Structures are given as structure tokens and as C-alpha cells.
Amino acid sequence: MHIDTLNPQVYASLSRAYKAQGKQGVADRYLHRAMNITYDLGIRSLEAGDDSTAISFFEQTLDIFSGHPLALGKLADIHQAHGQFDKAILHLEQAAEANPNYPTTFVQLGLLYASQGLSAKAKDAFAKAIELNINASRAYLGLGQLHLDEGAWTDAIEHFEKALLIKPGSPTAHSGIATAQSNLNNL
Image (cartoon, rainbow, N blue to C red; front, side):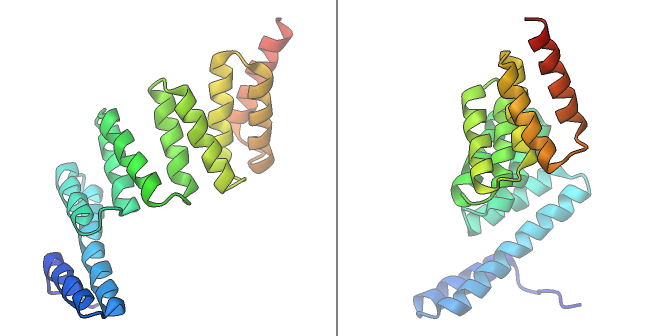
């Protein structure tokens, strides 16, 4: 197994030097190597249960490449787990901006917005996830739950049914439909 002996800052410096020489391909390789070292160390720290060290490595990754969507997503996960929802939202919004074609980020953002009572933003995030991936079942479930919470029973049923088309065995979708249907029957 090959182990890199240089630290990420050296790789980042080499990347800048090659870029200044007009050697973009070589510069990109060194930049990716620098990012991957710090990102991988962040993942290892998370796996070891050391969130503060993981945060440090993910922030180092962002120092090298400010729009690293995976590092931003991991930071959001850590902050959300610690109840720091504003920081989690900020990192997920940055991840969505850095990689606007990744539907999972928008699903995560929608779920986080919904948990914080930001229904309009949650709906927009879920809609964006569906626009990017029509099979984003978690987005349909999220929209269904938002409509259920608002008492929009037919809209809730519609979204839960779409989720069932993708994942027919979804207990969340079945339960949501039953709740919405029961409320419709009681009108």
C-alpha cells in the first residue's frame, strides 16, 4: 500500500506552483491529493468518534478547496448531531451551492429545514431534489410529511403515493397515506 509522505499543505503548494507554470493537469492532481488526505483523515476521525478532530480535518479540506461538498456535508452532519442547526444549515447550503446537481444534499437540506420549522424552504429543497432525481423517494416523503403537518391531506397522499411508486414497501408512506385518508374521511 502506498502512503503519501508529504503533508497536504505541501501538495497544495505544489498545486499552486504547477498552476502558475500553466501545468493545470499536474496542478489538479496535487490539489486533489491534498484534499483527499485531509478529507480521509476527517472520515477516520469520525469513525473513531472524535468529532472535534474530524471538524478540524474537514475545515482543512475546505481551506484547500472551499467548495468541497463532501466535507461540507460531513460538517453539517456533525453540527446537526450536536444541535447546532444554524451551522448545519449553513454548511448544507454551501454544499448545495458547490454542487447544485447532487440531489441528496437537497434532501438533507429539506429535512433539516423541516425540522427547524422552515416549511417553505424545505418544500423548495425537496422540489429541487426531485427536479434533479425524479426517484428521490425521501424528498416525496418529506413533502408528504410537510403537507400532512399542514392538514393538506390530498397533497400529502399524492406525495406519499409517489414515494410508494419508488419504494413500494415504505412504512412511512403507508402510514402517511393512512393518516391523511383518515383525516379526509373525518371531514
